[in-house]
Image (cartoon, rainbow, N blue to C red; front, top):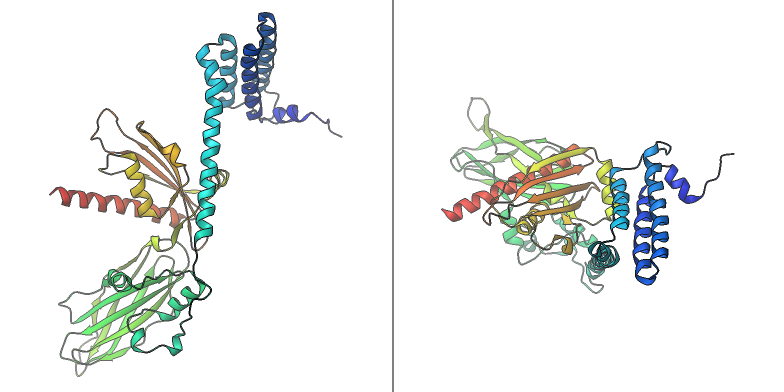
Length: 422
């Protein structure tokens, strides 16, 4: 049977010297307060000497090689600082240990309570559907009311589950923003696609227009995917009369959070012609990763645990014309759909440096972490923000896609700034 050690000695012999550093700080504060309560100089020196003996013994144990793990450099510096404070006992140092440390701890706990209260309040106040809201049945709706409504089955399902947020006022404009031109206006066949991203599915509603005076037979939309995308079924061939048009729908399944590309061509035969089949190459459709990422929260302990666990890291350099640290962080949060875990009080003030932790979660349950380190030369008010962003994720595609999104948003912002100045 092994020797049963007291808890404190057991932790120190196992190499957990953070407890030793905390004990040294506590003894230092007690000694400083003892000096304020007891006026006998002999008693003051005796208690201070006992505290210094305990602290120096912990420091000696950590560097002796007897524990399973040696003392860390941070804990060693903390204990040496306590010994220096007890030997000098300057008034400024006494104020820092007795007053300022307590105030800083109180502010940190207060900020943490405010953050937790804000997150719980946001979770409670969201109401997706009211109990007395009417239910719209797709089968009983009029045909003209469904024109241009996209994939109504997916929309109805998302509304029933409360996962879809569809604004009736902005639906037409939002749909126009998602239209991608696939061919040129001078091509014999004009095509454009409406990309409807609905969680795990992507519905392509492709409009094909025959701009010739010939009948196009076996007009086929051939699609292929790059990335973690899968085409569910191939679209069936159609026949297009002269100057006629048709809509072809294609479903694509999404398996993970990473940037994907859909590419392909339109193949057709001309009626009465003996030549080979005609091919019109389509422009690529880029699937944005931001459609699958939502802001999320986690504790500082969970963030550190995931940061140590995730093996894929992507380091992105800051390249911007912005001169304000907070403005750059706000633009970064807006472009990546991530949530800043660092409290607002920790980001206040102007010191030329800023560090923040960001966190987001995909609809597939994948976690994305980011650590932002920014700096600015305070001697030059017009100096741009510099630094880097470290992204960590469990999958390589998630880390690379987020980095590409950040680089793309930085380039787009710079182009807008140049256009505005010009």
